[in-house]
Amino acid sequence: MSPTDVIDITPDESIYSGYYAYDNLPNPCTKEGIKAFGKVFLPPLYSLVFLFGLLGNSIVVLVLFKYKRLKSMTDVYLLNLAISDLLFVLSLPFWGYYAADQWVFGLGLCKLISWIYLVGFYSGIFFIMLMSIDRYLAIVHAVFSLRARTLTYGVITSIATWSVAVLASLPGLLFSTCYTERNRTYCKTQSSDNSTRWKTLSSLEINILGLVIPLAIMLFCYSKIIRTLQHCKNEKKNKAVKMIFAVVVLFLGFWTPYNIVLFLESLVDLEVLQDCTFEKHLDYAIQATETLAFVHCCLNPVIYFFLGEKFRKYIVQLFKTCRGPFAFCRFLQIHSVDTPSSSYTQSTVDHDLHNAL
Image (cartoon, rainbow, N blue to C red; front, side, top):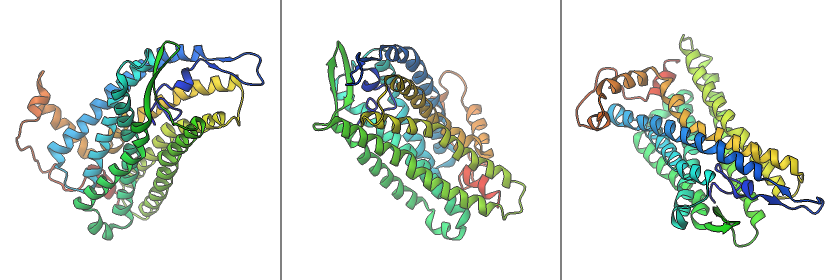
């Protein structure tokens, strides 16, 4: 399974193949305009997502190691979420070049990049889900969370999450292949038996693991959290509720359109929907919604950190210590910067949520 299949969040061979023939159409359904649109539209957008995602999530990792020191379960989840997003964005330059031209990186990188992309995709969504569960335990079951939300359990659940993400991504490693057709080299996943069935199962996997299950868990956790916060007499309650609302709305807004379009594409593959004009519009929609879904990995630092007051203080401290062309080198120097505000053991998000209690 690779981003160049129907599940892809990158240009897809089915999007760019050029010709589809139907028994009830006198002429083939040409899609060269879609390919030309992708060459212009996708590479610059992938580049922007790569740059902002790399910068934002790198800052998150640096702040966690320099100031937070991984003292809680939440810090562990935040670190892993940032690493997941970094894995995801590191694959984008390859897919951006692929959209502009063709796959020129060989079979080995085709398999590796497809796998890295999917591992980052699944693990990122899984850790967002774990963050929701972590908040639920901290707010709704505060007493129980003292035993459950430990650094050790955070590491154990993170390892389990990475294992599930790797297993879910194995088809991308095993079945990705390169082939040349009409003087263009493709990198995509191909099954040995029924390609339509394979693409349908891949789309179903994305819909279930990438939206249905995480969204159901998030809605349950955050509904319980909001109900608990409503019983609190605290002026900062509204701030915590707004943060929760932002997490859910942004997740829905950036991932739901892509999953809906992906489901419709499955219906086209199963020949439930057969209309050339509809397919063309659907292919344009895939390019737009997959890019929109990419942007979410850039927003995770904003969602989980920049809305927190303490993290803004860490950012100010970071830029005070980072000056000149070798700022990041000097940042990595070992020296103590702990201040009364940075010695707090809970994570930034936990601090803001607990302020509402």
